[in-house]
Image (cartoon, rainbow, N blue to C red):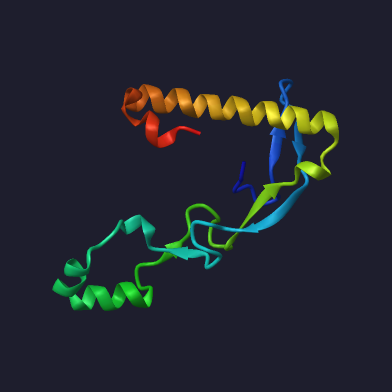
Length: 122
């Protein structure tokens, strides 16, 4: 589980106590560590790029880049370091990760039904 929290991952216990988890820095896979991305624009075909050379030049130059949505422009993500966690904290963290996965699966199922199950099957 990755986080955008500036100080690392936060584990919230059932009594609303927050524990800052130990973490390691990892290169953001979305922007490949560049901190900028134009992925929000979507994909373009070679034909579309040829049709508008000015746009193509600007796009390749990075004119449309903005801070990466995943890392906030830092090029890195704070990833919880399970090995550095105390056993009880790791157990609570694992339980929270499982609950979040199940919540996302339920939301995805409600939104799309079962027609996308083969795409998101873990």
